[in-house]
Amino acid sequence: MARTLAAPRPAPPAASAPGRRFRQTAGRQHHAGPLTYVLLVLAAVVSLFPLYWNVVAASHTGERVVEAPAPLLPGKRLLDNLSFAWNQVDMGEALVNTTVVASLVALSTVLFSTLAGFAFAKLPFRGRGMLLSLVVATMTIPPQLSVIPLYQIITDLGWFDQLQSVVLPSLVAAFGVFFMRQFLVEALPVELVEAARMDGAHSLRIIWHVVFPVARPAMAVLGMLVFVQAWNDFFWPFIALTPDGSPTLQVALAGLGAGNHTVDHAVVLTGALISTVPLLLVFAFLGKHIVGGITAGAVKS
Amino acid sequence: MATSVRAERAGSPPPAAPPSSPGSRRRRPSPGGLRSRLYRWDIKAIPYVFIAPFFLTFAAFGLFPLLYTGWLSLNRVELGGDPTWKGLENYTDLATSEFFWNALLNTFTIGVISTVPQLLMALGLAHLLNYKLRGRGFFRVAILAPYATSIAAATLVFAQLFNTDYGMINGLLGWIGIDPVNWESSKWPAQIAISVIVTWRWTGYNALIYLAAMQAVPQDLYEAASLDGASRWRQFISVTIPSIRPTILFTIIVSTIGATQLFGEPMLYGGSVGISGGSGNQFQTLSLLMYEKGWVTGALGQASAIAWVMLLLLLLIGGVQALVSRHNRKKLGG
Image: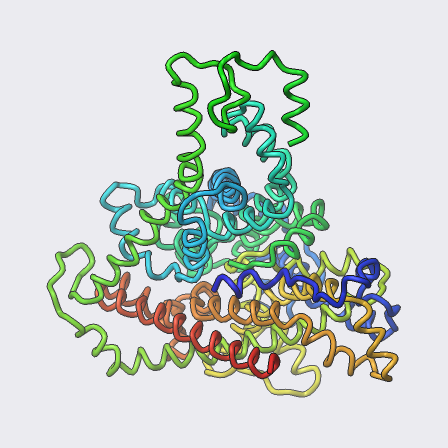
């Protein structure tokens, strides 16, 4: 697996060395024709329409949403639906829970992944290669394999329906370790570490004054990717939390959709909107960086 | 090394004692060698300290549960009860269970009809985004927007769009003269609807991964191809695709892993009958079956066996992939 996962950053073939300066524009040699724009606009419409329609549905009454023909333009009920979802079905609490969970998971994953990634990239130690392969191999283990014992553990500890049962298993991820390692191998000159060492800096100082500054862009990208993933995580939170206890947004939505409460489809879709809008705002403002991060990391987990 | 020279000039005078080892030469004299012992400990142990959080978390929440699930799969365990040893019975039960084979087949068919179009469309989109474009940033962010939605939100929206009676998709089909399709209870339409949700969420993401790989393809390859008179389509097939093959393989593996674990989309798409994968189990996947066995029926041993079958499947897929790529490399390398 290590080979496959390392693959998304293919080294340019040797033949390309003389053509290096071309790589800036590589593959973009042609201007797009009208057909390209037509297809891209179509793709953008298909991508964005369900999101637009989510807004439309959240701004009508439940009865109107389930009438044919389906509404295409926003109605006047958005604020009513929002306040209902906020007060009656407590999407507000779910929003807070999700923010807490995703922030903790992102912070701790970034911190621990940077430390481990630095060790794997720049520090010599016995078993480094083997341990790194092990990290990568763990990425293929499906979460289904651990949920049954995890469920028993958290019930025994009395953590069922408590947020720490979702946070603790996600404190650090193999993907993050691998991501930071790939970045630091190239970005951090080993001389920098050695020089700091010569000046008598101990490892924590080196982390603080050398590694963190160099790794900051990758840490930001990793933080965003992990945050999005933790925000949207479904399988394990659905087992460990309940819609009526302290749910994350996804668990609360599952409760709404499955009809634990009166199924008012406008309210259900208002809930969906509440769960989507924060991330969409992040994407709208940081879109470029996230696009850059995905293309740099090129790993979906 | 230049740094150490500079440090020597700028810093306090070096210790009078002769340098003991090159590593500690720059350090102040340390009574009893405590600092140098600390220093050596720092060098030797710190890598393990840094990687420890990952391995401790993995041991507690990954490896132990993995093995424990394997052990459970050899027992009869009721939710909240004590295990009794059953050997391979859970596995042989699966082999004769029509629900298991149905779920396995559904996982496979939904996986194929969501992964194949998804990756093909992503390739095409990446190729289009690779032209010199106006509004490049907008298009990239727009096709990535579905990635920002959660499984739950996306599925609930699409469940409305696919609704047989009032959904917009049947509305559109009616508009061009096609009878309403039963997107919930007919097997293939329901599986297609679920695949559409998966495809919608992931196509843009994969397109951006392909785009990054395409931009690393050296320009002179294209120049040589166009000198040889290759059309743009020909260049796409003969230059672009082979150049980004490692990336394509990577996305195939990752999508396959994702498809094997499909859970949230069919569960939420099915609404009140979601856990059984529709009224006739027509879209019950392995993950759903596992959840139903474990948390609805309470048979954790059987659920564990299903989880282990999933791992074995993934290992099998990984093995086949390794064989195929080795075969390809031999063919290419000669």
